[in-house]
Length: 332
Image 1 (spheres, rainbow, N blue to C red):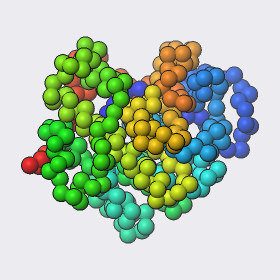
Image 2 (spheres, one colour):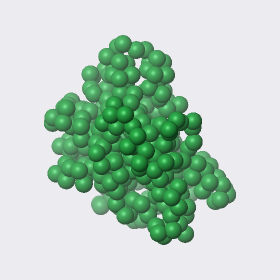
Image 3 (cartoon, rainbow, N blue to C red):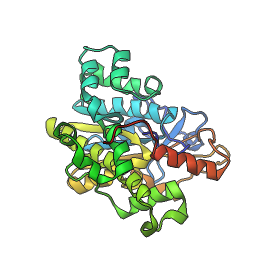
């Protein structure tokens, strides 16, 4: 699924051999390109290098790196942090929203050399921006023989839940239903409110007035989040003491909602760190930290993507279409 809001993300250009602490106040300036970014501890405002952050997270069970899909700053940060964390702990798992669990075999076949890349992209129905955005992290995992988890729920099942509601899962054959969570719609009130506001605006946050179609759209979203959480936990069971790096659209993780909230419900002893992107507008000199502290345990600031819409009504309709994207699917 391609959620998402035009915005930004962050990353640092400091290489592993650089000094441990930032010494140049120029690091506090806004990002200068779509690749440039600023990685920050939101509680202290300290600018961090990728190696510094990796050192802090070296003992964390699950590192969730939120992204704005297609933003080069997000994807470059993910690749650099993946490598830096591997240097601390080579027992690493890459978990990806960008592949659906029913395509795990195609992904495994590629990792194990039985498929070429284009064959894998076709068989796994990879996202259109795979080569530009996700090839580096998958190749790093392949070269180091690391597991890669296709974490998302099957697209057809998500679409049919969005159309028919939760009862659709009862119609699935065991081979389709068994890989999905036993409790596929766990959520939190704050996440529901955020979801509805993203789709309908602040006037739509009265949950009692939600249409059944909107409720089912939200349940489809919850199926994604719960499936990703379940896949992460299952990967940890199969590979004990491995650190999971989970890549996902920031809506699924920021403010520790979505997938992260489900992880905490299912495994409260699990340590989870959330790294979230935040927009730093080109015409703003001061780091926009104060209003964004709760978005993640660490933030990364990047330039905004080009504005998609000037018309708010068109933006909202496009958001609705993204959440309930209607491809042909046999739900009978």
